Amino acid sequence: MQRLKSYLVFFLVVGLTLPVKSQNKILFVTSNQHTYGDLKKDAANHFEEIVVAFDEFKKAGYKVDFVSPEGGAIPLGYIRTSDPVQKHYLYDSSFMNLLKNTKRPDEIKASGYLAVYYSGGGAAMFGVPDNKSIQELTSFIYLKGGVVSAICHGTAGLVNVKLPDGKYIYEGKKISGFPDAFETLDADYYKQFPFSIEKKLKENGGEYKYSQRGWDGFYVYDGRLVSGQDPSGSRLVAQKVIETIKNQ
Image (cartoon, rainbow, N blue to C red; front, side, top):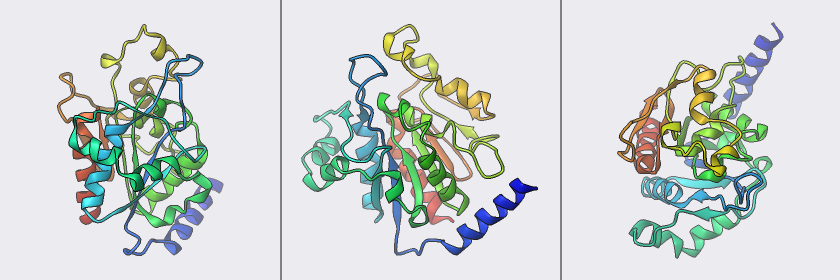
């Protein structure tokens, strides 16, 4: 009964704080982690997964804010300057300033966002999945009718997200993320991961999907939950988020 009361109160608060359309914002979730756990091996946020999705949202007229567990500058990697989109944003000082000054969770008002997008990279496995404030932001955005999305290792950030009724946000829904089949399971970097994305999603009731071919733009869509397997799906995930928002 107490859980039900809390659930109803949550919806009452959500109903009173629905965002106006003029806010038109999407929240990107990133990580502050610089290494693979205790190793000296560098970890980073996947630059392509950030800029490709950012580019789609910007062209569609949305404003993007970045959040990380600690706020401030985030580590970047997997950068290809041969890709014109990545090169453009790498030398765009206003964009790079956003990544240098990401917001802390307590600086974010969830009612101002139409969607949340979790980018990946090895860093996404650390700090984000166990951050309760980011979990609550995501749950709030979803319950008020927003879209929740993730790409590659970014899906790790969703594994612990629950709704007020205690169910995982992806429970009983199709969801994707970087599969164990493409990880090097005996590598030192993988041994530092706090969990397997694939196994955790399955254990918690998610209908995990992935392409055995890989790097073919694979993503799945289930209601207002959009998730992609690897970097090649970044643009398609962003486009699906935009389409879902417009069809709301």
